Length: 193
Image (cartoon, rainbow, N blue to C red; front, side, top):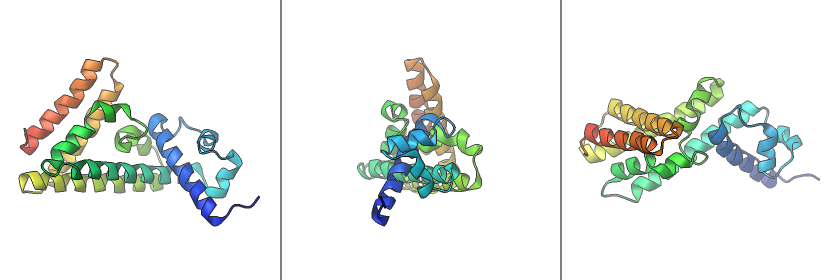
């Protein structure tokens, strides 16, 4: 049975969305194409009608993850105009975000995988990182009245590192302390604490 162009586009989008979540949960090598296609409700044989390679899917899934979480972060900041930077920090360094690996920040979830990926994946990821730095820079400028790309990069690095370390701890108190300590230090550096 032939699939319409609209249905094919919808199927492709569903595969990318499923892969985006699975890759964030288990990494690029921890997820096979068969699993992605099954979770998308499609057959494995249909994969190569949609994508040239797993690498192409990875690049699109990274791009989708970056777009989705960028929207999420923007929504969080916009919902708190009186302290949008603080709202972003509170959300990003929360236990809810820590525990939502499949829906959370792809930088913390996939950074080491991307370092070993091909150029298309690295390009998609780099574009997303640059966009996040710009958002952080804008929010810091709102709160401090001055822009600093270097401070924004340090803030992002601290947030990602704290989230990553927090996810690796079995000790719930230590896990939470990584998040809280990072939030406190960011507020101190940015002059909000």
